[in-house]
Length: 316
Image (cartoon, rainbow, N blue to C red; front, side, top):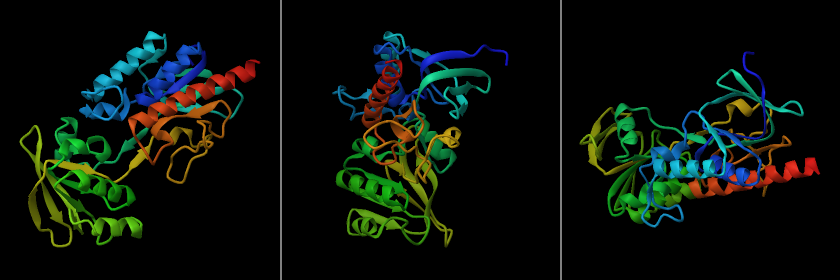
């Protein structure tokens, strides 16, 4: 290996609200944290145009701007924020090892995993266009539904989360068209019944988005395709919500850290601790329920405090 091994007190893997908050707390505790931002510096929030529900921003804030502010706050306390992706780890021994971009090796007394989860999308070119432009495609109804109040929207998905988001949207939107790819729900019966009983939700079975329609800047509708008859229909909506799940970014940890069946990291209830001593988890890498910036930030704080107490116990 060409590079010398670097030894650190606290290595934070991943950015976003969880990682940056952990960095702020760890830096203030004189842990000299080193944070690698990962493949998407700032995390999922950088794909959100407006964040309207994070405390302390009465006028709302641009998602990328908010993450830049959190990063700068961590830097103010001398957190070492770096570009780079952790591509491999080894937690088998007393020393926690991590490799950056397949090359640089770091040995850390403590590690905080804040790699988050990536929303699944349909992969349509038109979907990705409006997602990147922030003009009407979203994977979080709780985050962005407010901007579509009293408007017609569409949601794709058939599981419990999709049902929860459809019900949430129905409370604030004029109409919700729900597309289900098969001829049945994947959700629990109670969630299915709740959706079907809501007069503002129009459920379309055997249906998919064929194309997201718009003026180039904002969404104006969707072309729906019936996968049984191949017929299509254009409907007017201002927002399209994709609720087909998330993939936790935890693959490189699976040989060492205990995971749930769905791939999320298991933590000891009430803490950020994993099954590996000195390895902690924060944010959406362990949270498949709330998935909010504010809860991610809270667990980032927890992880830093847990790491600080772990080190103090070892040194004491």
